[in-house]
Length: 430
Image 1 (spheres, rainbow, N blue to C red):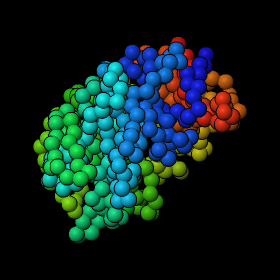
Image 2 (image 1 turned 180 degrees about the horizontal axis):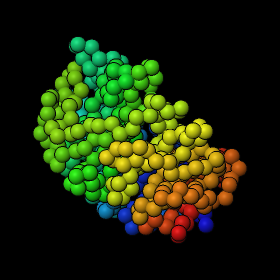
Image 3 (image 1 turned 180 degrees about the vertical axis):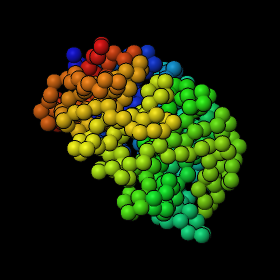
Image 4 (image 1 turned 60 degrees about the vertical axis):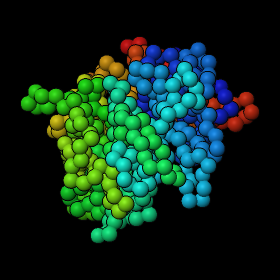
């Protein structure tokens, strides 16, 4: 049964994962004014209970904006993007001008800085740009994020004198980072490093990537390697490669992470004024999918984040089938041939999430919420098929911690006559 939780006059935006409180009683969201969330001008992080009670967790001031909130898997903490306070013409909100902050849901508005920033590039563990979409590891200690570099953002290509800004993926681990007192610098409670390597001009046909994006932690406790040992922590992510024919496509990659992220490798963790930050020693980046020879190459469909089964054995993603229909697929983090999960007649149009038992994946298709059986591939429509104007939005579809409910958004008419995003849940007891 579908239930509407929010009824306010503003758009409610869910992040694509971890929107439920650990006890499954609250859902966190932001209130960006644009229905798709592309205009970042929201000032509130809010939560709504299953009984429809709403509360404000954070209100930004001094010209700052906030959004893209996710919940800690075990504690009453929420992390989200925080834009610049007192913005100036040379420092407006943007990919390289944002940070992560944490708020305790029981103490609204008391924020702490997640990542530190040092624009002099002199402090290991501090970033020189902006972080985005912060997600805790299932253990609740480390976080991952995507990153853009302020010092290099003006450059579109690498030269002998400087690197360029390429989207990368980073990880935060608990350790206070103090930076020099300078305008737009700030301390942070977590030590941040990049864990991917990118190239402005990847060699066609190689495993070099131009951008790293839409990542996911692999498993609650990593994954088992073929030799029976366990890779304790790893990230799956999409990487933009260039085929031999010059086509730009998205493929799947994995970054296997060491236990210690504090030791430099072949360059400084914080980079330099003209070079990108360098991943720590022991990070291994490798490619999983090789789709360049398919009829429809590359990972495709709507913007989506890779998501893995709780045991880490399978990574789910979207790709077109031989009929050019976007379907769910899965692949082992150890590699091998991708296997098709769904065989629907209609495109999957949203991000998706696994049920915590690893048996089902929820998504949006054909103006409805669907759930697919991962092993059998059967798809089940669990809401009615709505008219186009009222259909579930092609955004977040997120299972609750107990796997009995799914949160999503639909546009409905508000009391003042405008149509706005509202949050709904639907039961799934199978």
